[in-house]
Length: 113
Length: 120
Image (cartoon, rainbow over all chains, first blue to last red):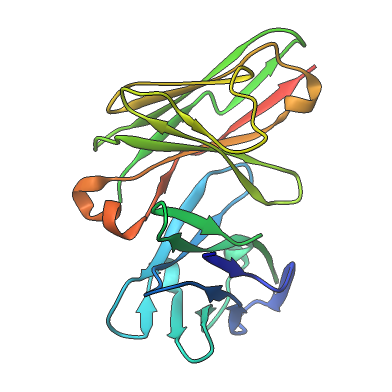
């Protein structure tokens, strides 16, 4: 089955420090991977995706993610976190059987001023 | 990116009444839309896949008579919660795929802003 795992429920980071949100995947075939962010009482916003090409993908709001095939990971990173980055982050992978996205459970990120 | 509009953003209703939530793709056509329910502990549950011009496909455990889905046009899908009860209170989110952007091949989804349903 196509799936992603987000091992941490919550990530706390001080403002200005690097932020990492972890995601590992399990797929058959080539993975199409995505990160979305959700602010309170809002829908999900697309941050970035990996389809093919460079392993380092740059996205919105200064976020980037590194595709690591050997570790089956697609961790989301930001060099310097802002308080406004406090939100819920979802990793997702395309399910090749039905072309749907399979979402992780979500990670709450709290950036402390 | 493509824009998906969802309405209403918040609705409060009495137990036993029905509530309709609309999901519109504003700048693209969507043959397929998805409806999710988000529970308080964050997780997204896919409820159903809405297919333009045909019946929706419901996930296991989702009552099709309870959650009526209609996808009458390429830009509009509606979710009607019939005879709502307090346990139906939740955050409902729709999403759509823009086939013209190649999202059909990659699976990328664009989401509405969500609808908070409170049943008294």
